[in-house]
Length: 114
Length: 115
Image (cartoon, rainbow over all chains, first blue to last red; front, side, top):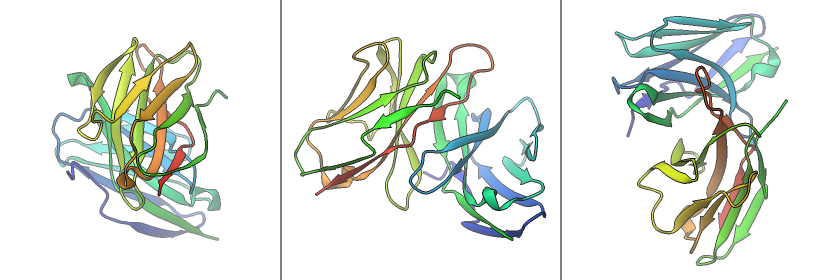
């Protein structure tokens, strides 16, 4: 079941530069998307979300872009900081269809190089 | 800031034994969830719970699993007869009810090791 895919298992970015994490999905019923950040031995921490009625949502250094026609979303972190080093998960749900379970991607390990 | 808490942080059990994993959701939240992550794999949905009943469950959530909200604060996941393949991190999540409250907030997880 690969309904949500994160094709880059890892990404390294210089401190201060932009980090771009990508996520693709196949289920057309998904209408709500979230990004979580996870440190080892901790639970996923919510970062930012976007509804399918929008194509962009911004919160401080984090911006999520949604391209519904391409079934693609991305998370931009600007500027990247060492504390951003973690595993980032994309998740999706079909809440408008009464299905609120989250389907997760496999994660991208982001390393910020000082 | 309110957060979801889970106990224990690590549980070791023998195959065939029963385990109960405990969660205290955020206090004004009404929707509760369990997910798990087997080492090296995705986070997977197990079950959602609202108004004292299961609203959805995955195919993983078979007869060996059950959930309960025994009082006003705790939410538990019971595995009746553990198998080796139940070894995983188990995450509890909760969310509020109402418009604009779709985000699920996760606890730190319980690492279950079945020997």
